[in-house]
Image (cartoon, one colour):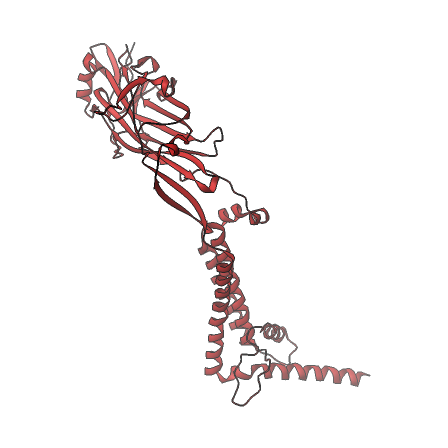
Amino acid sequence: MACPRNSITYNATRCACGIGQLLNRSSGSCEIFGWPSTISTDKDVNYSVISFAETLFAFDRIRKFTQSQAIFLEATLVMLLSWLVFCFFLRFTKLGDGRNVWFNLRWWITRLDVFFSTRHWLDDQQIVKKRKTELGGTLSVASWIVFIGLFAALLYQIITKRTIEVHNVRATGSPDLISFENDLEFNITAVSDMSCSNLRGIGNVVTGNPGFSEFKVAALSSLGSYTCKNTTSGPTVNFKCTKCRLTNDYIYISWHFVDLPDSPAAAVGFQFNFTSKNGPNEKHMSFVSGTLRNGSILDESPVTFRGTEGNILKFNLFPRIYHHLHDLKLIQPLFHEFIPGSVYRDTTQLQASMGRSTDGILNTTLFINYLSAYIVEIDHENILGPVSFLADLGGLYCISIGIFFYLLVQCEYRIKKLRNEDTVFRKIRNRRKALDHWDKHIGR
């Protein structure tokens, strides 16, 4: 049988893929394992809480459509500038006798002066009365635009950041730990051309701290069960513990793969997935998964794992209580470290190792550190109540009015023509009405 392309030979007749390579059976050649080294974990347990407001508004759709407050602020700025530019150019049009479209547009702008009708310029000893000006209408609408835009940004903040997650750490005792009953599952795949037939030495679990009386070896069945399944990426070893109550801080599980004819004990990486869930409801679960190619430094250079030195995967387990989820008790797994064992980076050295029977092994150890001295308590606190919302709303209203009121005062103070423009509009409109009334009377 011919050797695959890009392979190496050992013992004169045997073939194997080179450093960091896997056999592609469809093409019949050895190819570099190209998956990047990554570690991913859940942000938090998945949960769904439906409030009264969410029954009325599609908050999730709003959140997807508007990813930040900048969208609201940019839209507000565009609308504000468009309105001010429109009113600015409209001021250069002629009023005429009050019958053209420009006069009607500018007249209706004066009718929009709802915020500043009693705030216009007055000389000393004059009575305060309502005066609707074109400048006041322009700035009143501008105030509305700014207020609505800021109000929309405030609503977005309420929707997305109305609560914060608070973490508290407290010392724990034995009764607290016994109450943690989770389903734990760990899957690890030795990315290789091996199969489950290469698997050996599994069936025991070591618990406790080495050197102390609590250190002991027991059957793996006392903790849980294990299976091995052949996948396209290599043999996947599965450990499962249903309704697991951990009583030891340190747990070690070891196994190894051995050489078989045309299937040497070698791997180019490891893929793992560690999940913890509370009962059958997968909504309440925590996980960590990843791909390792060259140690915890996430080095992307190709290597091949093979030899007597063990490859150690370290995980930490944190007991957590989620008070906002009806005191849900969940153990969170976190990847801590990967210590590679015998690793080859040179093709010549790997070729020599393939020919030595003493190197025909791939050792792997799962080390679990259960951090049971402390419990992390998690809760959600509402940071925006009705009083703070009303305070923010009032502040936005004052800012929207205050900015344009200042502009109104400055414009009327510096440009005297703007002080009495309401009189000009009223005179033109009254003259037009008088002429229309006169023409109607003469027509009779």
